[in-house]
Amino acid sequence: MRFECTAGNQPAAPPPPGAPSLRSSVTVVLVVPVYHEEATMTSSVQTLLAADAGPGVEVTIIIADNACTDSTPRIAAAPATEHRNVEYVRFEEKGRGRALSRVWQASSADIVAYTDVDLATDIRVLGPVVEVIRSGLADVAIASPLQPGLQVERGIRREIIYRCCNRLFKLSLGVGFSDAQCGFKAMSASAARELLPNVEDTEWFFATELLARTS
Image (cartoon, rainbow, N blue to C red; front, top):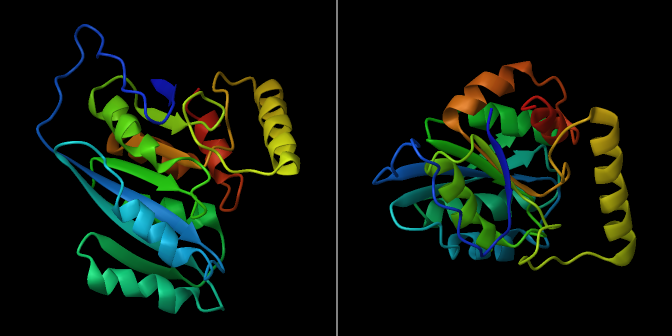
């Protein structure tokens, strides 16, 4: 399975010889898992709605409520009534991995993706990541904040933990990717159908296990 790590506002490389030509249009489902995010929900959705995914790309934003008990459900449901490309779904069980797996497997989109609601990874990654998969360069792509060209907002303590965890995962799992904890990942529908049924974790380790199974 082909895998690529890309930075935010940099265009993807040209497709390799023999790769399929770009489709005239492509659909993307972008899932935003949330749990008690009432303070940031509205601004994050507004930022996502303004993101440019490139020509011929139709993006549906799905806010996945992980059994929130604060005001997040009310706030998150509002954009779905105002924007045709925003949907809200609620799960009565907590677990980011569980929510992502269920939404992705139920989707008919060409590409499935997710971003953390805090948008710590610059949302400008959306266009380049979609282009990487759309062009046939990769089946799975991550937009690592460790790559040059991204705006990342993290405190020093969080940055140290982030880098140490990634180093530990890379050494212990023996994988080729450089960033297991990135807040933005995407894959083709065919890759999702192949990988998701085999991922066992339903919590925060879901994304790391998913990437490990691409190796």
